[in-house]
Amino acid sequence: MDLTTKKDIDWANLGFGYVQTDKRYVSNFKNGAWDEGALISDANIVMNECAGVLQYAQTVFEGLKAYTTQDGHIVTFRPDLNAERLAQSAKRLEMPVFDEKRFVDAVEQVVRANAAYVPPYGSGATLYLRPYMFGINPVIGVKPAEEYQFRIFCTPVGPYFKGGAKPLTIKISDFDRAAPNGTGNIKAGLNYAMSLHAIVTAHNEGFDENMYLDPKTRTKVEETGGANFLFVTKDGKVVTPKSNSILPSITRRSLLVVAKDYLGLEVEEREIYKEELADMAECGLCGTAAVISPVGKIVDHGNEICLPSGMTEMGPVTKKLYDTLTGIQMGRIEAPEGWIHVIA
Image 1 (cartoon, rainbow, N blue to C red):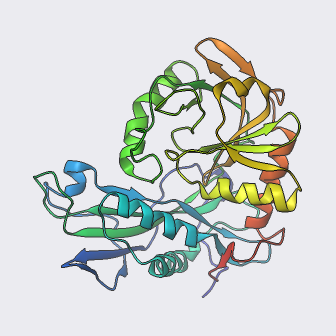
Image 2 (image 1 turned 90 degrees about the horizontal axis):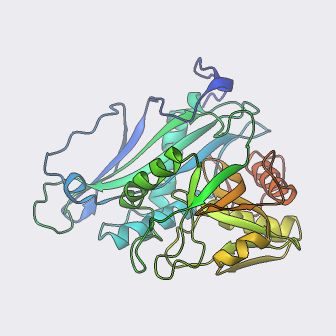
């Protein structure tokens, strides 16, 4: 495969949006089994007006990236964990599990077929992959669909933050992201639909994001609409919220390993109470898109909690975490075994 031929794209000025690429992967579940799956050219989906996904939001998804490393390889980052998480999401919504090895193989097929869209090393851009699954047959009574479609498309995207990551101002939301025994720990489309009104409200009030508290007691930090929290205490410990109703972020899990094994920091996953926020030195939102987005200020109903790291740049520990993880992803730093999946 020729990795040197690239599309005529202004890589340096790419936004974080959808660009249609040449191929996408599709597999259909019918009569109790998945078909062989194939790469197709058509970016459109045709379904019945009564499709289960349209009536009852029976859909789950994932997000991961393909990169060009320093030595010219095309790789993805821990796709096995995306496969595992999609399987857990599917089970929770009574959907058939797509085999985890087949998931990774489908990722490889899509990346190879769209290699011309994988941005060159040093451009700051990446190829974002969106695997997803949904109920496609007509469903009018409230029940799981019987037929499903699994797809993966990809799109080249620029860096999430143009010109560097400036610390965000976030608010503690009055909305709940998930129910106490609900679907907060899976990557279901319905979770994100529920967060839309809350994020629009936050933006209208001048905030960048929401901090959701635990839905049962509203005393503990959970996550934002699309990212997990990571804090650095004033004595240099990296702590992250522990809860059954937050999504198990692959980026967050990776950052905790980086903190402990690469930076020699003490790491703790535990319940974090709202009262502790004033004692934190740094705060970041971690996820696939931005890796870490620094937070400079948290506003709790008018009470401003200004983090010592400030509003101009990432805090020092957050910056080390960011630089180390992105260095691993881009091949500048040796990765733990199994983290980097080489495609070409």
